[in-house]
Length: 146
Image 1 (cartoon, rainbow, N blue to C red):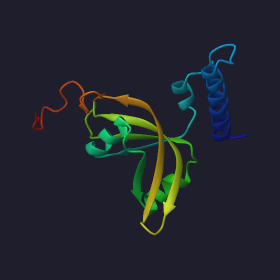
Image 2: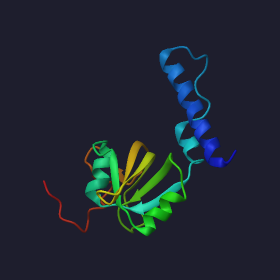
Image 3: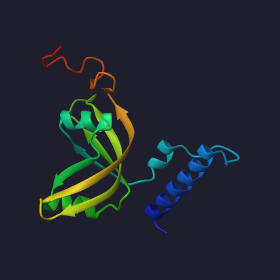
């Protein structure tokens, strides 16, 4: 059994235990937290525009699109769903970023895009969810609108 299959089985076991806990039939809480399990999944890192990062972080955008090009075809052929997608907005050391679980990748030849179906946001850094903007003054070079 390869590492990817093992990570999927661990994820399924975790979800089963969590559903039993919620329904009140579990004898003890799940032993492994979701963030700890995510480290076992493969990860792809890429950039994203701030508007789309804002929408994904808020939970309003559930599908991310990438053009069908040799670069993305190769990247997606190297991993199997589910996997982690790390999206970074910018090149600063404290650039806003989020890591999201991708459940499925579909290739739509008609539109010329890959559709990445997003599940949960696993990690969110340097982003203020309430204000929907970068945290702690990362907007110093841009114009603030009231």
